[in-house]
Image (cartoon, rainbow, N blue to C red; front, side, top):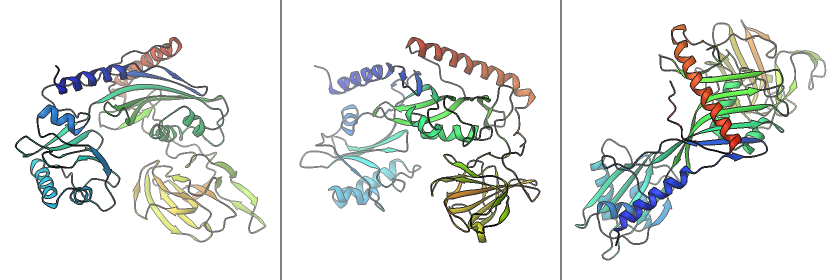
Length: 444
């Protein structure tokens, strides 16, 4: 008769084999090809997480436990108070937390358990021992139990995960956001896509039905829960619009910085983003207009984007917050100094997230759209200032970011070729309804 641990191990292996049989997924708005990468192997020299605390006790040896329960950490609760709340005696809770601190002094586990974090536990009763386990961050677990001599044992293990590469193709049917949701593009990938292409595409004015966006990115899947741990990084982004065709590749230069570059090694970044928010419409352009409140013709020295209150506003470029607060008719207002030439201003905000003097990065959320100051409705008033003078944000030609150094271009072209070959192979498998293994993708 097989030992219970060997039964668990066989089940774990069959589970992994089943996960590898991921098929091509298709919808009317997108197609996704999922390619499993080499999975981690269970080895004797590294401890991997198991399904439950009971599985760990079967593997390592220990007192039999009763029913495994689960509850979430409450606000302002630490592990000690949690254990007392769910039924552990004060002496037991003290012994458990002291043992964890003693065994793992370099990891500040007990103070960093977030609210609503899930903890699995079995309460000691009669001759039954106790057991506790919960996740530490995304990739580790803590197990606590008693051995057959009732001594407390602890172990931190690594959660086994599967890394896959996905090619996601989205065709615009109404707007980019809705099409991305239907295409099951993860939020973090969508956000990076917006930040990368926001320098070259005006998402409010240039998108049309039938435009196509494609992304190649990695995803890590927890082999115990089969849940997505995280989706990143993006290796490749393309956009095919009526008059625009863009391809950008992630590349890490010798200085350790990763950015996106076009086929010639030129940066995807411009000094400033064309539109510092997503999902809005242009409601008023730059130039003379009849002011909606004052009633007479007045120069409008910016552009207005209409969107719901609370829409996030992005910093259009790297820089320092020069002004943050109320500014008369502008209402809640932020002005960013990007360099000696360029500044941007954002008015009528409902909330301001960044203080004066704060250094920010391009794409950082600096506030939310509102209707403060002299405003007839929710909108963002956006200005670009060149040497202190407001200019039309839609017409200004912006300089590009830094290109790849000449002595690194050969390595970049090789990386680009590897990515192109993988995309070509994946597209063919989408057509043939196949899947295949890929080696881990190097980000260099």
